Image (cartoon, rainbow over all chains, first blue to last red; front, top):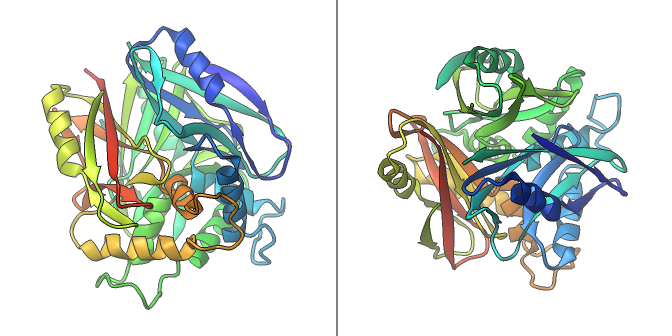
Length: 132
Length: 132
Length: 132
């Protein structure tokens, strides 16, 4: 299992981590298999989306915060970050990439992101590769 | 493949299943790999979130039910549980845990939950481990 | 890694792909393991849900479009399909199926779907199997 850290700078943001994952896959020597990327936090998640126009990530963060408001008076959790927990579950705690010919396989426009919902913080990302 | 059952007691609730998964991983003898937990139902899902304050699970259930109302008059599905189907897809049908040194790896605050959206029912959980 | 294509016919729709996945698993000769299905696009996703009443898929598409409106004036992405990108992340880029006795394992009512959010288009689906 490999690990790296990501420093987030805002409360809600998508941070690109494709380069780090690509490097771990390359260094593993695995030629065919699956790369599992896991987020060991409960107020951040992982997602795959557009790698070209940063406005896509910006629109996603905007819409997710509109859907799950941070200040809903019905929340009971005393830390006040229930929205971040809910958004972490909606985006999910892992993403999964295929490996072929020793390289990470992504669609043309795909990038991998850590989805921060309760930053700024230092976040860990865990990576495990299964294959041969 | 291993299987266990969970008895849910309310219509919408998160039921902790970390102990069952940890036990299956321990008994498998696998020292390094990935544990796939799969929910074979279409009105329940799986998620990973806070294991400490039960108000997080409570706030999540509240907010998910607000987002996807049970009684939207536009639904056509005759069984009347469309909201449960939609929430099952939003949370997802599987979660994935890394295994290292023979132990399930989770972040400090993470627990694994069955997300019931159309209970009470008896639910099955399937577990497969890939590794060595 | 195997690949097949799906021709979508509407802007937002769920297209069943269970038969194609089942065939790939059967032909792989793998008797026990995990099948990873990956969507290499950023405005479509994958999900598992009811295989019987098509109104479930219809209600899901309706509700997802209500939750994430296509025409929110706050969007900045110039291509005008931010909603499709957001829904792709909410449904997710991969689904995972268990394989036992050489067969794909699904719950009684489960089917696998490509979730199109910006069609009509020709979409690719990638499949990787890990096991023995």
